[in-house]
Length: 485
Ligand code: BG6
Image (tube, rainbow, N blue to C red; front, side):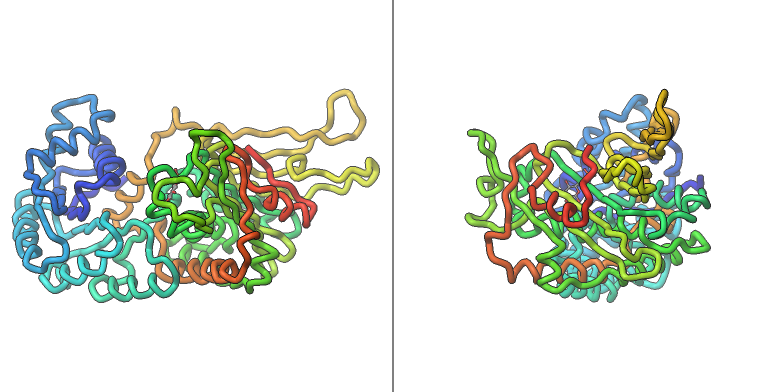
């Protein structure tokens, strides 16, 4: 693979995300020699650190990955720290001088990556000042990478995007959805591309229903301040679930260029209707976790959660796509906190033969299906009906298990992959503005519907369960059942 280098300016360098994800991701790339010696990182944040302290922090963040101390020392020597008030224009001059110096010292070439890992509220000031200080200009390659959340509804997302667009071109804005960096999410595309027989059955003639589950066992913990304003719909559906759904539901473009993949996803997202409040009521279920055990908090007892909060910690839904390919095929999705297990799967449930002779109404888990196991187990399984041993022609479901394994493949972390792609200038696994605008349109309609509903429609579900009973009822109306872990 092509080697990459460049100058990285990291806003929010003292933060948790930088230590947990970004430094390890860069080190992994360095270890694999995908990151050349021609790179430098400027970490910035308000704290008055110096280079030595910063390098200690970076060393600490990657300590689990280090088996060669010299290599580690060489790696951290590329890190420099500039204390910086991101909302003060004067500070950008200091930053600019530092950047010019490091570009020469490390011969980083034309590419500069601005990584915004700060509170989203200051994204607009940062990008505005980058332009005003003539740091981002028409010379060289300037890309910006942003963490979520990107707005809290269509309108705030648009204002943010308008602000960014003053400084960066759309093709230089890399909006992270870390689910797109997951191997097995990318594998959905690979399986569709490389197996024509799969594409041949990828329609309502053969597919019965689709179930996307992003279940989490952890409660919201210390994130109440953020989560209570977000809820499962903004935290997980607006981004991860709709992105995964569009990889499943889009029409596969002839060419695998980033542009054509984005266009295909946009077309798919556009075909998802904006639900009316009545449709929200019929098709979307939400819930809040509830604990009966002393010492284990219910959602409402978590820190920084409003008293009587109606924020959902669980959401499930049904989406029907009114196009020729998907007519009559429900796309079900669900996600929630404090559930029984943490797992992510996409189940493509295939139509069974009607076993009229046995008068058998098959449950979904007994139907043939293609299962994408995204985490924690990774792999693709095809469940086929075969003959039962020692019996006449009666079906029995057997799984053909693909031997996708992290042992034989390099275990690339989502951030490692996404940062590499950004340095390379490959936007395939990032969210474009047009996709994001559609995602907010869909989610805003659901939230507007909820706002019209009475509180009684926010069911509780026990901690460590599969979610509220209402989510089972949603599928039962269509004579379907969730396929659990
Ligand atoms: C994040 C959400 O985007 O994704 C978190 O903000 C969630 O609430 C996380 O826990 C899940 O990611 P993963 O990779 O652990 O499935």
